[in-house]
Structure formats: C-alpha cells, structure tokens
Image: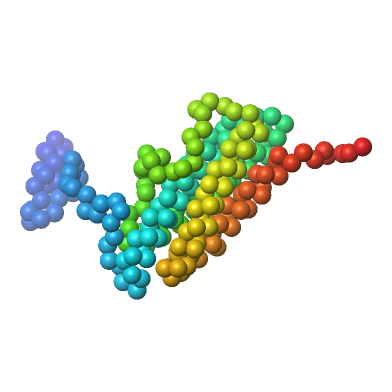
Length: 203
Ligand SMILES: [Fe+2]
C-alpha cells in the first residue's frame, strides 16, 4: 500500500509529457489586464464615445444599487414594531430585486466593453447615497432614508435615460427604462405607503 501511495504522489508532481499537471497553480500574480474606466473593443456597432459615456453612468447607478441593497438588508434586520413582519419581508424582497438590477447593470457595462464596479469599497467611493449610522434608527427614519436613497438613484437614472437616448445606446436605454426606473418607482410606492397616516377604522 505504501508504495502505491508514493507512486500516485510521483504521478501528480511529474506530469509525463511536461505540459499538463493536476496540481493547482497557486500564488499567481500579474498586473491587471484592463484598468477600470477603459474600454475594450466589442463588435456591437456603437461608437467608443457612446460606450464609454454609458459605462460611466451605468457604473454610478450600479454603485448606488449596491449601497441600496446593503441599506435594504440593514433595514430588513433592524426593523421593529407592529409592522415588523411585513416590512421585514418587504425589505428583503426589495433587496433581492436590487440584487437582480446589480447583475443586469454590471453585465450591461461588460457588454459595452467596460469594467463593472465589483468591490463594495469601490462602490462606496462612487455612490452619492449618504451613509446611514451604524446603529439602529426609528422605523419612520429608516423609511425616509430608504425613500431618499431611491430618489437619489432615480434622478441619475432619468439623466442616464436622456444620455443614452442622445448617444443611441438603445440597449442601455431599454435597461434603464424598462428594468431600473420602473423597479425603483414600484419600490418607492410600496415603501411610501407605510408612512401614510390612515387609520384602519375611522370614527
Ligand atoms: Fe433574512
């Protein structure tokens, strides 16, 4: 048995033809192959100017979506009070939907030949959504903070819809209008209804 084991070890470390080895190649280091903010050429019949302009605005909205996702998860965990259960579920649903938008936005940037924001610390540098306190806030404050974060993103999305229309980047334009804007507007509606002061029974 001992000789079989040592034979197997010899086989994996010396690979016979000298070309392939089953051993993982660890500690690989090399300079990055495409820096952030640059474009590579993809044959999609769209000028570089249009592609780079779209990548810049999409990445800003992507960074905001990452931060908004985090805000929804934070509020999903910290929500309290009589509406705990429904808001706990709603905030998680919205977080999941923002996660879908994150993927759509990132993959659109990649489709344009750019580099999508990936690291949350990079997103934190780009976002304009104010950082919440690390502790817990009252529910009405959490909701207000969430609605203002949405509006910050929606302003950028509306501007980006115009930009992509002018540059005739219809793929990004469609994504921004059909997926991003409508999703944000719907989420705002669902959250805002929780701060309408309407009694269950009047009189
Ligand atoms: Fe959860």
